[in-house]
Length: 224
Ligand SMILES: CC(C)(COP(=O)(O)OP(=O)(O)OC[C@H]1O[C@@H](n2cnc3c(N)ncnc32)[C@H](O)[C@@H]1OP(=O)(O)O)[C@@H](O)C(=O)NCCC(=O)NCCS
Image 1: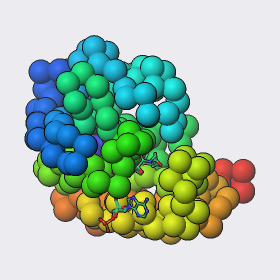
Image 2: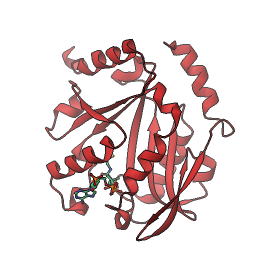
Image 3: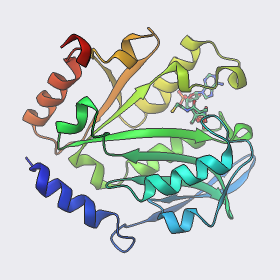
Image 4: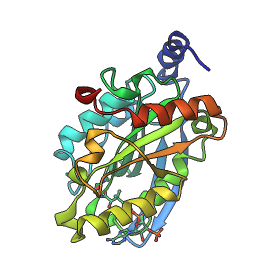
């Protein structure tokens, strides 16, 4: 098991642009050809733009700044689908917040947002992006967790209800071996369609997996 201090050392070097082994792949869908790439350094992202149809979380220009910020965080990773300088899809990863219940765990990385530009949705861009990301051996050393929360879903734009949306999210993330997990996290318990999802890398030890399950089952801090 890595100690917290050794994890800190790794995270400081991992985000140097020269260290990141960025990969690329072509993607062809009816709307056109694009490139999947990542992890992408913040300096590259700052010279790009987000498609105007990407406003699920924030306005595109504000969200782009957020991607640049995440790319510079310890273990922050941003993967994009782009057509020239226009980003049409992205997924982000970062370490748990220092205030979060997961902060004590040395092997956890959180999946942040995933978004595909509206006119490119339902064409397997999101699924292809995730498969590209998890082809990297790097992830096999970590438990990647995510919060499926109806608060982040584009229910209006998709014309899906919460259960249909949850089903779509499950089908999306199951392609790269995420599964829903038991938790007492308030953010999950507040709505029955919400879920904690996790992907356990093949090199993660049983102790680290059990520690994850123990943290997941902790009651919210106010009830502890
Ligand atoms: C969630 C999102 C990234 C999915 O990207 P996408 O490129 O549309 O997803 P895919 O086309 O790869 O589809 C993934 C699965 O969902 C299914 N799906 C996609 N759109 C669907 C729809 N409108 N209705 C039902 N199922 C749908 C696909 O068939 C696929 O399942 P399958 O592999 O079993 O066929 C995209 O909808 C999006 O950007 N939504 C807004 C932001 C958001 O909600 N992010 C998630 C919260 S962080």
